[in-house]
Length: 69
Image 1 (cartoon, rainbow, N blue to C red):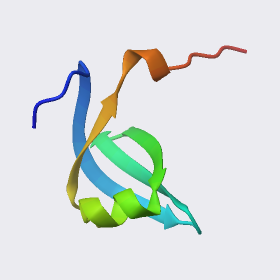
Image 2 (cartoon, helix red, strand yellow):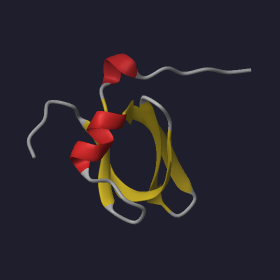
Image 3 (cartoon, rainbow, N blue to C red):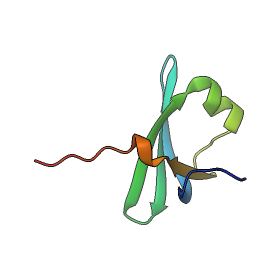
Protein backbone atom coordinates (compact mmCIF):
# COMPACT_ATOMS: atom_id res chain seq x y z
CA UNK A 1 0.00 0.00 0.00
CA UNK A 2 1.44 3.36 -1.03
CA UNK A 3 -0.34 6.54 0.03
CA UNK A 4 0.51 10.21 0.40
CA UNK A 5 -0.72 10.57 3.99
CA UNK A 6 2.05 10.64 6.59
CA UNK A 7 0.01 9.58 9.59
CA UNK A 8 -0.67 5.85 9.27
CA UNK A 9 -1.52 3.95 12.45
CA UNK A 10 -1.74 0.14 12.32
CA UNK A 11 -4.17 -1.55 14.67
CA UNK A 12 -6.94 -4.09 15.07
CA UNK A 13 -10.69 -3.63 14.76
CA UNK A 14 -12.16 -3.75 18.27
CA UNK A 15 -15.76 -3.21 17.28
CA UNK A 16 -18.05 -1.60 14.75
CA UNK A 17 -21.59 -0.26 14.69
CA UNK A 18 -23.48 -0.58 11.43
CA UNK A 19 -25.99 2.11 10.53
CA UNK A 20 -28.25 2.57 7.51
CA UNK A 21 -25.54 4.27 5.43
CA UNK A 22 -22.38 4.49 7.56
CA UNK A 23 -20.36 2.28 9.87
CA UNK A 24 -18.52 3.53 12.96
CA UNK A 25 -15.31 1.52 13.31
CA UNK A 26 -13.24 1.43 16.52
CA UNK A 27 -9.56 0.52 16.00
CA UNK A 28 -7.16 -0.27 18.83
CA UNK A 29 -3.72 1.12 18.00
CA UNK A 30 -2.15 -0.24 21.19
CA UNK A 31 -3.59 -1.20 24.59
CA UNK A 32 -5.50 1.80 25.89
CA UNK A 33 -5.17 3.79 22.62
CA UNK A 34 -8.17 3.68 20.31
CA UNK A 35 -9.33 5.68 17.31
CA UNK A 36 -12.78 5.83 15.74
CA UNK A 37 -13.60 6.35 12.09
CA UNK A 38 -16.92 6.66 10.29
CA UNK A 39 -16.90 5.14 6.81
CA UNK A 40 -19.60 4.29 4.30
CA UNK A 41 -21.31 0.93 4.52
CA UNK A 42 -20.10 0.22 0.97
CA UNK A 43 -16.46 0.84 1.97
CA UNK A 44 -16.88 -1.30 5.08
CA UNK A 45 -18.08 -4.21 2.98
CA UNK A 46 -15.36 -3.75 0.32
CA UNK A 47 -12.63 -3.71 2.99
CA UNK A 48 -13.97 -6.91 4.56
CA UNK A 49 -13.54 -5.55 8.08
CA UNK A 50 -14.32 -7.85 10.97
CA UNK A 51 -13.69 -7.74 14.71
CA UNK A 52 -10.03 -8.61 15.28
CA UNK A 53 -8.91 -7.93 11.73
CA UNK A 54 -5.87 -5.71 11.09
CA UNK A 55 -6.56 -2.27 9.71
CA UNK A 56 -4.85 1.08 9.29
CA UNK A 57 -6.14 4.41 10.53
CA UNK A 58 -4.91 6.90 7.93
CA UNK A 59 -5.07 10.53 8.99
CA UNK A 60 -4.59 13.31 6.47
CA UNK A 61 -3.33 16.44 8.24
CA UNK A 62 -5.85 18.73 6.58
CA UNK A 63 -8.70 16.84 8.28
CA UNK A 64 -7.50 16.73 11.88
CA UNK A 65 -9.29 18.98 14.38
CA UNK A 66 -8.18 19.88 17.91
CA UNK A 67 -10.36 21.15 20.75
CA UNK A 68 -9.86 22.29 24.33
CA UNK A 69 -12.13 23.16 27.25
